[in-house]
Length: 322
Length: 281
Image 1 (cartoon, rainbow over the protein chains, first blue to last red):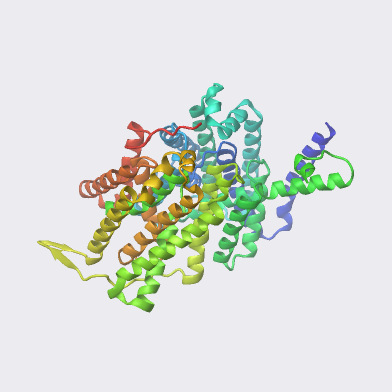
Image 2 (image 1 turned 60 degrees about the vertical axis):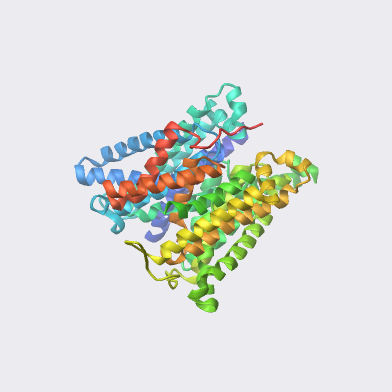
């Protein structure tokens, strides 16, 4: 009981430091932290879909792109208020992902990944080609959420939504649905035999992940003030996967830690973008090959070892074998 | 153009049939093939001997693919990795990103234009770009060769057997792990030769493999995963759908019609035209 309370206390402390932090940072770092929170939302929801459920969507970034474009187009062309535009774009995305999910999640196997990969490229090409409507490669000017370029209010907005996303994912994973999702990943046939409606829950989790992606996308669009098909490049999707894998798949904190640490590394190495990507991709390959679990697993093992040295705490099977 | 994309999807589908692994980095093998061909033509061979380059490209990409399989994909089957699909997907995607950025790092983000393989020709009244013509003929020759290999030779028959039943084949004295490696090499070589053939048409740059890969994956889903006749039917129907859409609706959205066809096929035949539902034990 005390341990739980300590855990919550630690989380609260982290949140508090995240709230206080921007007062001591220059604007540039606040800006990049805000973008980091965007990636936190994306990576956490992709972890829900790809990590916990085992369904690989390769169009997570595309749902963000569609979300930002829909909301921006609705607001500028139809002249509706900001919140209505954003919410209707989320609903549109939910509908779209449900359609795509029903079409390609009926089968077992890798159909979702294949179809979403094609979907991502097609949407990007469409936005690029239909330049009279979407602005094409020049990008589309979006109205700003707070009517100001100062990143401070956006920082808090993104923080709120990132925390909200993490809480929603925690609730889902602790509920009955979370167990359904885990069984689907472990053995889909067995899950069906146990009476889990696998297709329904797969479509459900695909919808949840895509809607959160579009929420992140709309916020991002109204934060930067300019959206372009560049954020529909495959590079973005790869970044999300890199965050999740390096942080640790199938852990609640993994994507968050991964996104924050890799974004920090990326800011440090931003003079050499190619070397950066080469390093990250090799890191992902090495982690998948030799050490499945990422940073979180690494921390956990280190923590266990320290506990053991102190002479208390459980001894894991892994260490017993040694 | 439908026939040209068949090479890509054939490579992927062949690998999938043998190992149940999708090679997401196939576009990058395409790109590597194009780069190697460009280097060979400009530095050593000259544009007249482009067909010599094809063999060297096939050789190089075969060994690269086999090497990648040996160090990265093989552990899946020896019992080290538990999450097979997840592992293969993430590793090959990371590999794609790695190759792309290595290409940018080494060659720079420039577009290279290889010299033409053949001057523009005409067949009867039809004016035709020589490069397109050569790519078309070359693809058909390679496909015919591949089919001969698969249907008539002993090794090809062994491959068919491996794709039917991995355990059963072991009892017939076939080294499955070795065949996996060769299959991955052949799949990569198909993509690499495709890249070399299409180099003057699509030009050579780090992202030149993306568009053919999209088409390739569309063809795979339409035709059915792991089905080789499906590839041809799907490739043809994709080509027809695209040209019809371009002629009657709007030519600038040519990429979208294929996806529409894919959605339609998924709606009426979820496993593709020739695919079968997967069975798991």
